[in-house]
Image (tube, rainbow, N blue to C red; front, top):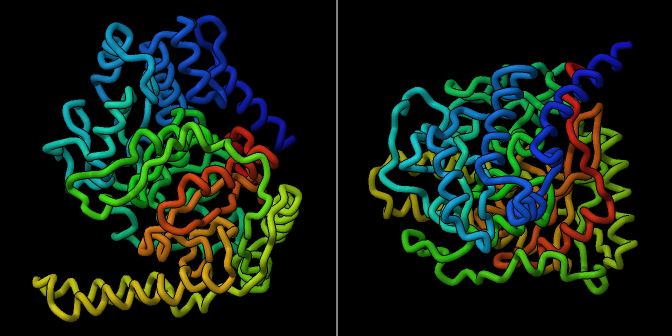
Length: 444
């Protein structure tokens, strides 16, 4: 009987969220479907924006109270009305509402960027962040700011969420607070007592819960969506040279939104896997459900034609992001960012994470891509810490469920290979179809 009521409640939530003019079903909808509805005049942009404002009210402030959104834009409906009258329907994101993490600057829309902290309450950015400029130019409507771990995990080292749901995973998640002073504690839409983890918990949960079609989190302004196709569309919109970021000058910008589905198999694609890191339950980081799903994922890759190469990942302790963090923080005590201590710390981080880390791993295995469970602990092969230092992109796609809580698998490629990354992830996504909409279970 314990399971019946949650599913009844979930059905009521989903039914309420799906109703719209002309019976348009918003649940699990995509950018393509929304834009098709706009072009066919089944929906207006204003109706779409109003729907998502209503959903945020129902799920963020009422019902399960997910706390995924800190604030919504008071100008969103006016922006939508302008799009209906004058918007260019051929733009990549015409009429698509999007949420932005609270540490990304937006201006002119009544929103403040405060990194989840009351210390910056009322902060008005002098300009839109470059990616926000790109989103607006592509026709997107910034609906609001999503919740996050306050200061993006640089403030708290404890977690106040309930850990009962999966004791073996305590050590993996306990450093991810998933809360902020402005937004409160974020809740997992799949199991409300389970942690959300990660500093971009707000963008992630709002997309997962169908509160928004797509969102932007960090590291480095990443798009989050329910499908690889939607992620490719947003990436296409925000990619490009930022005059204030010289590191992006030489980055190519392929037609991600057109090429993500170009492959029909993974023939001749070499996939590197650290078997111990992804299948060893003795370290208390992995559950049997994760191991079983990962092994099935490897079988899926083989069925798609991939060549699998097993090789142990480089000594993770030696390239732990925490070592780089401590070195960098020590160097910050000096106001002179050109001193030898700071430069030596940068060089050591680069060496630990890149030269003798993932670059060496790819070179030794002669692999095209790394395949690893998506884990938040800093020693995992899929940890964003050292890949961010290297500038290597990561794509995480749904893989399975453990006690009703979802987990994913990551594809990692060398720098500037986002196009291939999306192609690999799309094939895997279509072969597995692992994602299901959340049911807002009170416990598991």
